Length: 152
Image (cartoon, rainbow, N blue to C red; front, side):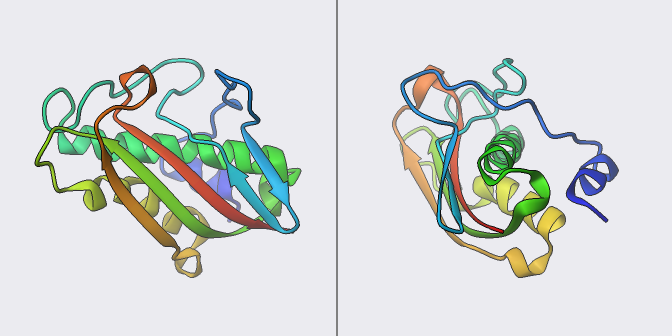
């Protein structure tokens, strides 16, 4: 089953390529690695799950924010790799969680991305990962994510 078919089975679809809000590319390929720029849960231009986790955004919404940010990273990775079918593996996920002081569930939030990656790429896509709590993110989004892919 292809990644698009797996997405459809989950009731999800790959969003349009997110447009950069600054002077950068959505992703860049170097050799067989594709590095995404930081992506958020903005899907087709609509911001979702805005605010601080632990105050404005609950744990379930933050998990979904990480999932949606991963969808954007996959769209960016596919663009840089020359197609979704050229993404082979996920090497590293870095997740930033805009959270209140004392919040300690960043790993569970970023599981929203990791769980989706496993469903789409399989268990062999188990990856290195960081889940970092931060004081603020651009546009007050709850999660920002970067992914490094291996590509053909």
